Every structure is written in structure tokens, then in C-alpha cells.
Length: 210
Image 1: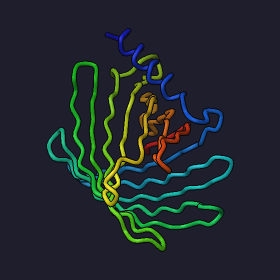
Image 2 (image 1 turned 120 degrees about the vertical axis):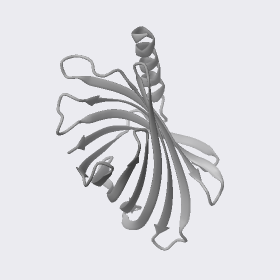
Image 3 (image 1 turned 30 degrees about the vertical axis):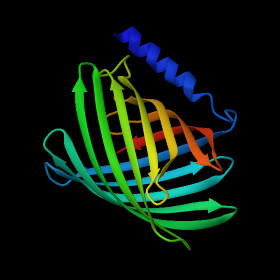
């Protein structure tokens, strides 16, 4: 079983490396702060920064999570986005709601979520977008660092144009030996559908949970 999971992990990592321009890697990093309000309700604040040769994207996200039993959860959030487009920073207000679930199958921990976003863009009409993501984590932790490898895939669906226009495929690890930080490191391939073709690039990402 472990050998099959290792082969799958290596295969997906090799697949990620086939981007249009693998030499040009973007760097993303995020910090997320979580606090419990009650047994079922929690609040979170996330700050995200993205850069290539320079910083081109920043967002702040604030929201609440309500757990329903041991498997289901509902989130309601508001995200403020700032993105540099042709040297000009533009803003976007993005309220969004998410329904998520999780299940364990032997050594696998599988989670799925569906998010509906309302994108209020600067100088543009508001639009809805749906984002669905599946994540598979392997085992309870390997080596003395208690490393948990995972793979994930996220699809973006434009509800206005009624088409799939983005995909994100992940291979990463979470280091559980640092309980108050839970650092995650991942390699992600983002593919965007523009001008009748798919274009992709690679991202090296870091995330810290406090």
C-alpha cells in the first residue's frame, strides 16, 4: 500500500513539472490565524502574498466556520483582493460561502469543499464563480518531523460564461511536528484557459497556521 502511494505521489509530482514555462516559478505564501469561539464555531483571518519577479497579488480574508457533526462544516467569509494588472493595482471585494466534508478511508484522509464566490470587481460588473476542491492526505505522519504528504486538485467554473477556466493541481507536505505553526509546503501547477488554449505555470507555496 505504501509503495503504491509513493508511486502515485511521484507520478503526480512529475506531471506538475510539465508546465508551459517551468523555469519561471511564482512564489506564494500565506499566514492563517484560527481561533475557537465555541465547540462548533471558529473564526479565521488569512493574509496571502504572491510574487514572481515582484509582488503582484495580495489578499486578506476574514470569516467564520461552523462545524456540523464530525464530517461537515460551513464557512462564510469576506475577501479583499488587490492585484497588479499592467502596473496598476486594482481591487476586488469577494464575499464567499463554502460547504466542506471529510472522511477517512484507512490511511487516507479525504476532504472536499465547494465554494461560491461573488466577485465585485473594480470598474466591472459583479460575477459569480464556483470553486470545487478535493484533497487526499496520506498517513498520520512520517519521519521524526511527522510529515503528512498530500495531493489536491481544484477546478474553477465561471458561472457567467458557463465554462471551466482554471485548474490547480497540488503536491505538498504538512509538517505536524510543529503544532502551533503547522507549516505546509507545496508545488502547484495552475492552468488557465485563455484565448482558446490552456496556459500553465508553477507555484512554490508556503502556508503557516497559527
